[in-house]
Image 1 (cartoon, rainbow, N blue to C red):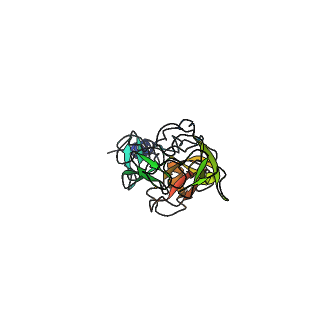
Image 2 (image 1 turned 45 degrees about the vertical axis):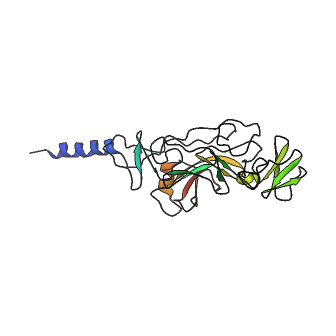
Image 3 (image 1 turned 60 degrees about the horizontal axis):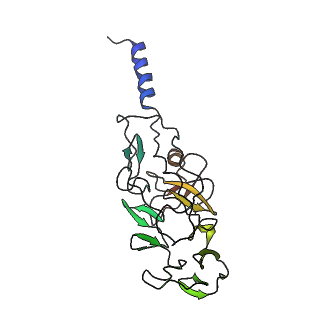
Length: 245
């Protein structure tokens, strides 16, 4: 017969081994590099991002394949991720999206206000090289792209800020990351969003389907966080800091 003391010891060991069931998502891929004002939205590594990579540890005490992931998440390298909505694990573990993209239904897709143009995501409303459409003549030197049209002069209209792009001007809304975040040339990384002019890390709040998602955001991104509406009808987002994009 198993003693009561032995049974209690086994229960304690079981709790230590499996922890609280709170699991981390993978950390982000870090910052992008600084751009020189080239073609907007080329998806390359030519732009600077603010810091704000995800926390690697947000209280995950459950390790190994014995501990299952919450509903809607899959295990990648010891963490639990949402392959349908995670920009650095999109469709498969390590299947990261590019700049100006997000993960939607397991596919990397251009962010809202950006459009696929060849291999790049372009914002037609502000790009002097693709002002209004993919296959149009670039705006002339000394002009600007504003509201998808080339306009003479480099001074943007009310509500827009101008950024020099090869002698032309891109007129955008930098507080919202359109097309830069906070300052000319600053492009947020694939696992970041622009909130109040700053690039901050984000992660899907899966399996939570409606904010505030406190427990899932604490697991996914760590504190401090804001629970924000999802992109294109996706799950709520856990955004580092106290502001939503």
